[in-house]
Length: 167
Image (cartoon, rainbow, N blue to C red; front, side):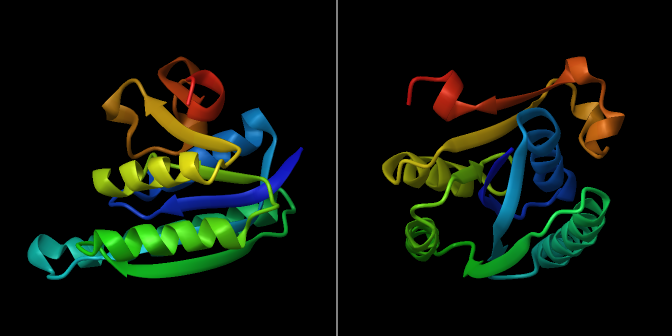
């Protein structure tokens, strides 16, 4: 079992957040002893985006409680808030969080969140030499709003870019 610090960003779909972690736990023996979640706040509430992001985070928290209880895990949750249009601050917060956990096994999930957040996470993860950079590749979008056990195994792949691609 790999114990370490997991980094992720909340996006519109809570499934993208927790399915990656769930699959990493079950298929890669990855136990998150600490999770840092970046919550991006839109500058305006156009089209209910803020409300959807808030709901996604609440769903993640609910799932995490069930997950840690089901598997008897001790996991600390830290949440970092950032304006989604302040890329520099987001990058600085991400880099600082990774540096603060130096010496621990670290994994970044670039599946959920905005595209810029995934790009920044991957870049900083490479610069800070994290152990894993995970991406959950769903081969059929009709399963996007289902939990990991409900998705046929042949339609989902967990890629660790640090191990499967020469980064």
